[in-house]
Image (cartoon, rainbow, N blue to C red; front, side):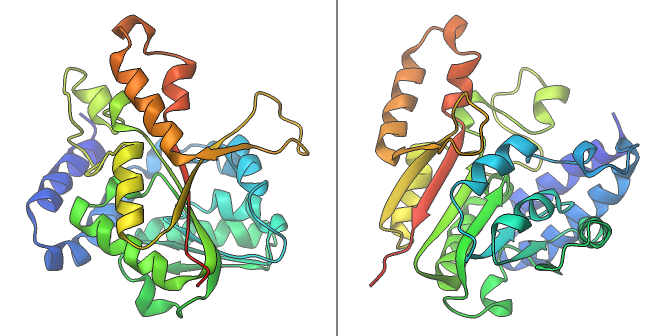
Length: 278
């Protein structure tokens, strides 16, 4: 097993067993250490070859649900790909990440791209209220982040997102669905495992995410779907989040042979949660 994978399993066990106070510092140590050990996996300096979770197609989808006047916070910005590609569609962006190597690379990527409306900061998903003002952002985005937080920390994180969002603002959450998991390195190293053993501490479902969003104060949740067309003027499909819960129920009752392809994609979590205007 590669050293970076051994390190991920090691730190994942620690994160699962640690107290909330211990995890606040352990996240930085864990993700910085594994990021350094895994750098050799990326032979190309092209940002298109160094994405993690995000992609050109996903950014195109996001560009349809943000506005040119929006101030956007990306939580868990990784190597900066989404900030790089989404910057032309918004007024400003701030990308935050807990991994020091990722922050350094993101800053270099944006500098080389001569992007001037984006800042990158080394900030944990649990420290947003310490670094940003109340009602500062129109949109918050996280791509493959919430599944990396301990369930207790996910609740705290959502409260902090609620704090920094403007009234009427929206939190766009992209993450895998536990029903098709595990989705971390467990799938490769332990294919018979039924639960994630690596950094995915909190793979969830639409039902669970909508419930926790509403408990955190968000008053409306929508599911975001792309289209099979790639034209920029084609708007994505936005449906009530509860319909996605119905889709999960259907998926659970399908024979295993039918749980592949587009059906797996359709229940991947792409959720927009809105902060009340009042």
